[in-house]
Length: 176
Image 1 (spheres, rainbow, N blue to C red):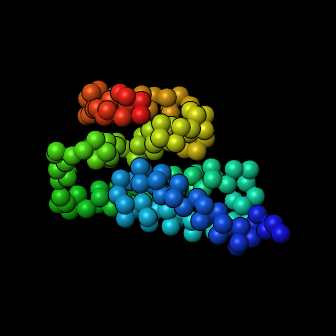
Image 2: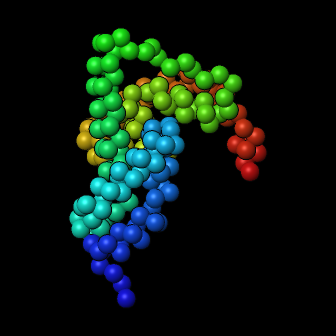
């Protein structure tokens, strides 16, 4: 017997099947395992609240990714407001850059240096392999904005990482 798309059981099935995929995207967005878990759980809680609508969507995972991305950006805006308020009262300076890190950690550190919206665009466009049109729709901006932000962000990442780091592993060179 098939369960209706809007049922609690259907949500549980969706959450079990999609939780790891959502977590990966969350981790790339925020760069921290604990925060990524929180972001994933917040996203699933929001989806559960609106499951009647989300469960009947043509692409429920895309719906979930939209919720995840918008939740991430809203949280970053909230943190930025708090940080600005804190810095006016004599807060801390920027965090020190990680040294001697492997490529993955270096890439995450470089991603963390991008503004949240630009980081979301890069992750959605190049990690999630979404089209420019889809990213623009998810982030409620123009396609031209996605293209220009991604171009600038990739330039910043190349500067930070150096071109050689993008092809540093034997895995890419040998095709294995």
